[in-house]
Image 1 (spheres, one colour):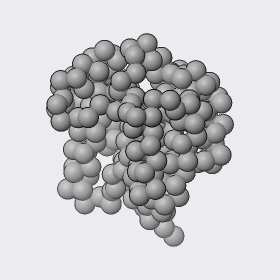
Image 2: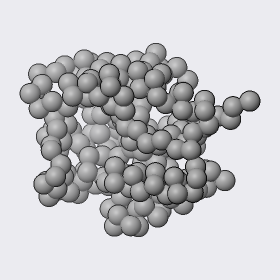
Image 3: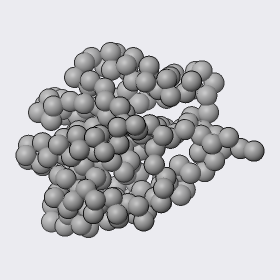
Length: 210
């Protein structure tokens, strides 16, 4: 019988530093001889990456909020069916930079569509496939956006350029989601140094893998 893998997702406001930390965690797990894959949303596979380009394109400022939510759900479904679920069935640890909670926070609360309404869209897309563990990189939106502004190597996308009020709403949305799923979601202080954040998240993951 094939052992089910472990699905770990990472969430947080813009500029929380998730991507760098996740890459380090992936390398550590590989060094331990673990079967692990690293992926992201929206994206991770060809079709979803094309949808990502549409969503984040700075030229698409006229995009309707519901269109945005539906595009995220469509990319998520293809990514899940093509990459995540097969890997989990083969017993892999799947590290995913963002998943359904991003839609609940950004489109549900940030765009004002409603967390339950966006959850309903995504339940059609993902069924009952929820993460085993979600780590929330907790950081003040202003600090995260300041990090992005200082990073010359990162191109600012359509969501990065939203006003600060939108990013505060996203952060508020995440707090609501964390209260809704306390057994799945764990906070980590993302305002610390990259080394400290990495070590703290590593400890959380190791607890899950025991």
